[in-house]
Each structure stands twice: as structure tokens, then as C-alpha cells.
Length: 110
Image 1 (tube, rainbow, N blue to C red):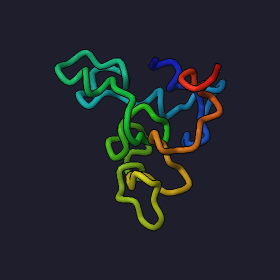
Image 2 (tube, rainbow, N blue to C red; image 1 turned 120 degrees about the vertical axis):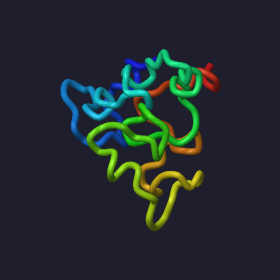
Image 3 (tube, rainbow, N blue to C red; image 1 turned 45 degrees about the vertical axis):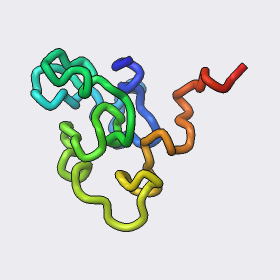
């Protein structure tokens, strides 16, 4: 699961090497001991979940970014927002967002 998040997406910060999002590689769980989505502390169940609005690299929840872009990622959204209200309208990362070209929806495809 964590390796899929490392793939550069349309919402990634734009810094990518070899198709991997640099920010996703920098992101850590909130305790800072492990990479994002590989948490093993008492917060692991919540930290390793991939639901709701996410930061640009999708490795952390929106507003809880831990990479070098944390200052801008964690700032309150100004202007038009995504339908969930957690991200700018043009970079929605929640379940209400348009589909990601790197993802395959196996729940509706036959």
C-alpha cells in the first residue's frame, strides 16, 4: 500500500524522481519514527489508514503534512475548496475527487 502512494500523482508537489513523489518519500508518521503509512506506534491504525482528504502526496491526512512542503500544505485553504472542504478545489484528494489515473477502481469495473 505505501509503495503505491509513492507514485507521483497529479496532486503531487511536482518534485519527483523516477516516477516517485519526493514529498511522499519524506513524509513520516506523526511520531516521526517511521515513514508515512508504515507506522507501528500506538497510533498505527489511524496513521496507516488511507481515507478522507489527503495532503498533496497522499501519504498523510490533509492538514497533517510532515514533508518539506508542510508549511504550505498545512495552511488553511483560501478561496474555492474541494467538496469536502479540506483542499483547494483544483487539487482535491478525498474520495469525492475525480479518479486518479494511477488508480484502478476494481469495485465498479467488470
